[in-house]
Amino acid sequence: MNLDQAIELLKTAVKHTGNIDQKHIDLTIVPAADRSIYEKALALSALSIKEGKITRDEFLRLVHLDN
Image (cartoon, rainbow, N blue to C red):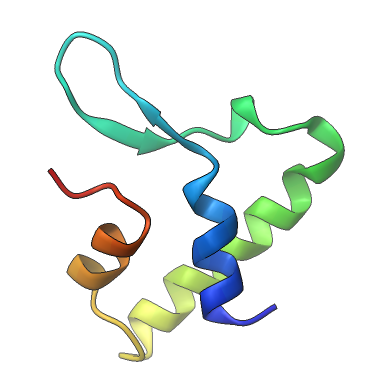
């Protein structure tokens, strides 16, 4: 899996937080059988941010977590 694939996958796990109009990545909405793939996507994204391949702000924008 590359970073682009991880971002596309994580977009499907974005959920509104409720009354405060924020979004977050919620792994409880993905099928249990696929959860490990999503966890790998999160780990790859975090590593990419840490290594400077992408900024945190850019990642948040790409997965639609920016407001």
